[in-house]
Structure formats: structure tokens, C-alpha cells
Amino acid sequence: MRRFKADFSPLSAISLTFCLLFADNIYAKQENNDLMSFAILGAIGSLSLACYEGKAPCTLAPGIDTNKLTISLDNGADRSTHHMRLSLGADWKESIYETDNWKVSGRLEASLHSWSSTLNTPLNKSGYIIGVSPVFQYQPKNYTTAYSMIPYIELGGGPHLLDNIVIENDYKSTQFQFGSIFGLGIKNRDFEISYRYLHISNAGIEMPNPGTDFHNLHIGYYF
Image 1 (cartoon, rainbow, N blue to C red):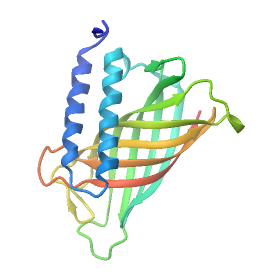
Image 2: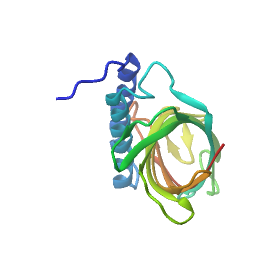
Image 3: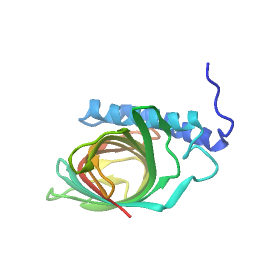
Image 4: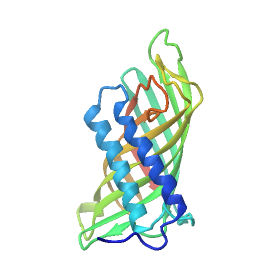
């Protein structure tokens, strides 16, 4: 059986702890159970792969390339709740994993979210969320299409902090939450565009634990 790589650091244990907390999100009350579970398990699997390979974000060194940045905007909704997310990401210096036909790469994203309710008298009408998430992109290698577009699958997630314990009419129990990401998109050397799903809940830290699920159009620009 393959052994863990030598540079597997104490930070890996912290990352795996976050993975276990993600797993508890499965019990969050919401409507998109299959999509939610896929996003959570995908985040767990991707982060575990990075730790197994001894790659960022599971190393003491940050391993990010500040010369390869992405600014992105997500815009979408959760039923009666409108959502907007602005993020800045920095690529990792090396791929997480590669085969002859596939590559797993990614970046670390810091994000600022705003949300607002379209309901007339919700318990909380609007608010803000900040988050940090490792995001992993699975893409084919040596893939050529018109305009050099490459398809990809995106998975990831990380800690988020709410400005208020209530989103619309949902009492979230804790301001500290986890966000899990699943996306399907295309990209070229300059930009990416995708459908991106974001699930937010508190990983079962306290109950009740209602989930919030945003379905977004995601646009990112590389610079």
C-alpha cells in the first residue's frame, strides 16, 4: 500500500479535520440532497487527495503563485434569496495530481458574499458572508476545441463566517459555517465560465442546521 509522502505536514491533520466536519453537513436540512452530498464528498475527496500527495493546501508552505491570480464573480439565487460572490484566487504552484490524460489543479480563493431576500417580511432581509476555500479543478490534458476551450469539473470548500446568525428565515445556530462548491464549466487561457453550486451549513456543530444552497453563474478572469 502506498505510504504518505514525506512532506505530509501537521497542517494536513487540520485539513482532514475540516473534511470530517464537512461530512456532518450531510444532515443539513435542505432540498438538494444529491447535489449537496456530491459537493461535500467531492470537497472531502479532493482535499484528501492533496494531503495524500503532500501538495498544497496540505503543506506548511502556502504553495501559491501570486503571479497567477483569478478574480471572479458569482451571481445566483436560493429560491427567494439573491446571492452575489466576489472572490480573488491565487493558483497553486504545481498541480495536485496528473496522469497522461487528466490533471487536477486549483487555487486558494478568498471571497466576499452578499445576499438579499425578496420576501416582504423575513427575519433578516440581507447580509454578508466572508470565506476562504481551496478550489480544485479536474480537467483533461491535450484537449483541443474551437477557441481552445477546455471543460472542467470544480470541487472545493472551506470555512465561512456570517455577519448574522439568520439568513432570511433560517436560524443557522452558528455564524461559523462551511461552504462546499461544485461546478461544471469551460475555460481558456484568459477566463472561465461555469455553473457553480454553493452549499452553506455549519457541519452539525449546533442544531438546527438548515442548509442554504445557491445556484450561480460563475465568471472568472485570469491575470
